Amino acid sequence: MNKEEKIQEFQKIIDQAKHIVFFTGAGVSTLSGIPDFRSQDGLYNQKYAYPPEEIISHHYFEENPEEFFRFYKDKMLHLDAKPNIVHTFIAECEKKGKSLGVVTQNIDGLHQAAGSKRVYEIHGSVERNYCEKCHKFFNAEYIKDAEGVPYCDACGGIVKPDVVLYEEGLSEAVLNGAIAAIQSSDVLVVLGTSLVVYPAAGLLRYFGGKYLVLINRDATPYDTAADLVINDTFENVFPKLHI
Image (tube, rainbow, N blue to C red; front, side):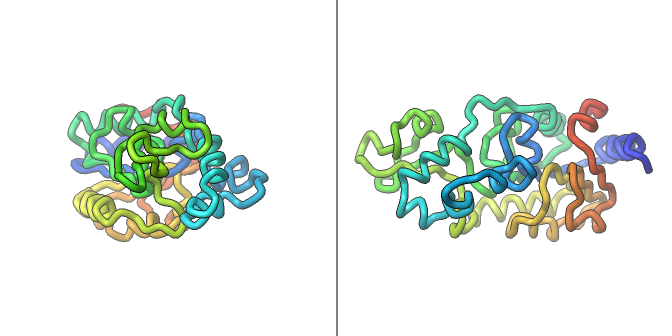
């Protein structure tokens, strides 16, 4: 099939689906102007004193909070970003009762901003931040506006973003919810992820439904297992779709 035929086939799959789960990665957020980590222009290919995976690790956060937050606020907080056509399409599927929800590797909160209610954020969210001492909640603006390290205005403890840093485990409750949704779906649509980050990519093995669809600019290790693969940009695919 050529690309146009593949898009038409994807439309048929959406039309016939009863329970869709969307699995989204950084490629969905780049359309909203948020850089990813692994592409040619991503954070892994930019120059810093330390590699990004070192800076956003648990031990670096503990040992160098000033440098951690300097990088985090500069490169990981994108509070002006808006949902794009992919986010709104997914939210509309949920509104129409076709979607069981979203499993996302993204931490930007754009799925919720678009209107999605059932979102399993397996790597956490910049929108949630907690004092390490008293556990008081703070929003993302509090982190962005703080000078240097953000401290709790109640007890003086460091306010830590609720994002999964390197060396930290994923939330068992979120993982279990994501697995249950994937197991209950008849269609799993994977969008904008290279599927090389584990344990997130391993969630695909829980899918036993009818159609596995992969839409990504580049090939992934799971392409041969998919029922439909579209290697193209979202700008070329989603304007041609309807719910």
